[in-house]
Length: 440
Image (cartoon, rainbow, N blue to C red; front, top):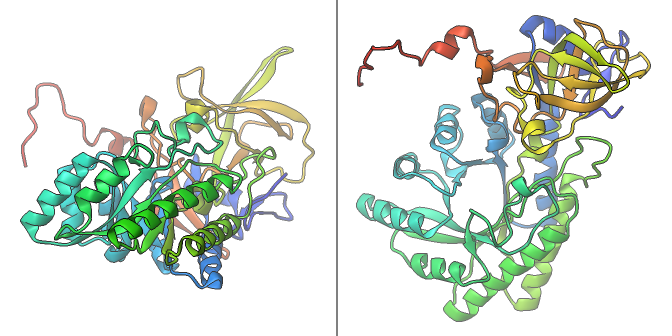
């Protein structure tokens, strides 16, 4: 069994996270329950930053908060000196409520609304990552009307496909994101933004995919972007000060996954950019990255209570838990695999293989197809590892199931970061038939 971060098995056989007994957390806060190992989050953030500092290069490490957004996690990110990547008005609003430094917020998205862009200007955020020509038009209009400057990066697709699941690959030529680097779109975007009175073009951005286990694709992407930046310097005497190479660094969900240490990806990026810059006579730009999953993915564990069990003779044994696709859609959405343990039986032998089923009314609601565990009983606490990225973020009220609470554990202490929804919360936006909503 592989344990993550500060996880350990206590003398009583219970899984501990951040020095806190997970079984006690389940009793105090109920299940399902997301538990975050905040010390692991901090360790990862510092490792990324120290890699840049050791290389003596300008940088920003922006937490890609689509992985998990909340006021509390934004505040921890700010404590660690991270920048912040947001992709919606809701995430931006959360960042503002958290008191996150606005000049370190980067706004992404392939279809930002006019209201969202106006909000970005009003809040005075640090940068907008421009995704398409429609957005360029909106930004020009807004900035000219407001007479307000805004830093921008151009997101490009470098034509590199990382080895990952099709649904989470974003950097190849056929993508809904960004300006194509190979068909002239990136050059057109440059022509439309460079030298604008209010739009300050910082440089280029790309994101080539997610859950990537080697560095080859990052090296290729860095090479193509620096080559384009060098071309613009030669033709227009323009030196891009920033190169944003995105994120996508893989983590270990199961024993089949063999990722590198997150800092290793950054070392390869830095070495590649330095080498190509030297070869082309281009000044080494500031490098920005956007880790999300690699900061919070394996820092998160979901605790469930095991309920019903079913055996299909000579086929499989099921155990059902009190959550499922409503709090973790990834297995049903694209076959994501997870590892697990019975949190109150850490000292017992692994003797059974179960399919872990959720409680949603869908045949495909299976969290783990084959979980090797001790003999399970109703009332046991099942811990599913590495659920920190896209668990809570993609949670829903399907079947009108309340979304779980989120707890942070660190140095033997724990605190509620997001309270559990109640049935009253679920119906709070509903209106009775025949009642006309009052306009505010």
